[in-house]
Image 1 (tube, one colour):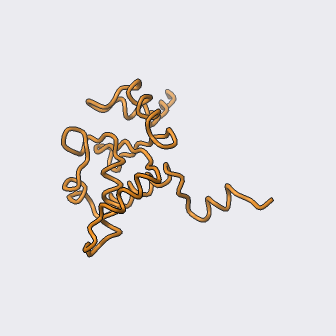
Image 2 (cartoon, one colour):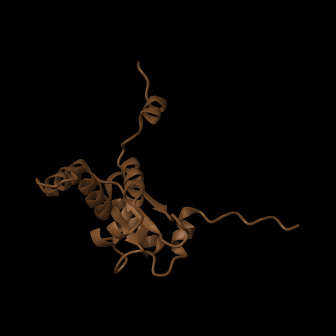
Image 3 (cartoon, one colour):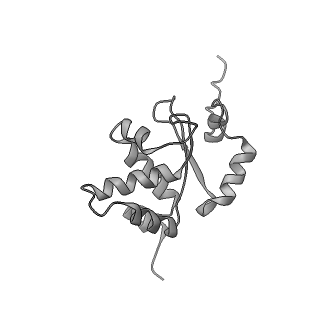
Length: 136
């Protein structure tokens, strides 16, 4: 039996996507984003999302952009952050994600993407904080 080939790395997977950013472009983007980190996720092997983190200044800007009279301010905030932080996707128009496309996706996708974006932005769950920190 021949050995099974290793699955592609996240970068290899992304670069195989039609019209995905090049490796050089990805390096440029990493130099411009908070933390210099990117992540890729493909919920179904077809739709692909390239994500970045957000800064404290961007967080404040997005918080201000949520309408005062919103009946769902947390959902509006999450969706706006996700749209801002999806660097590239094959699921949107012109490889960008907008609110209309995001709202037409599965109900769990905005929160899933937001969770990954939050991790890229140094937001950690209590278990991770406990593991990464300690009293001295």
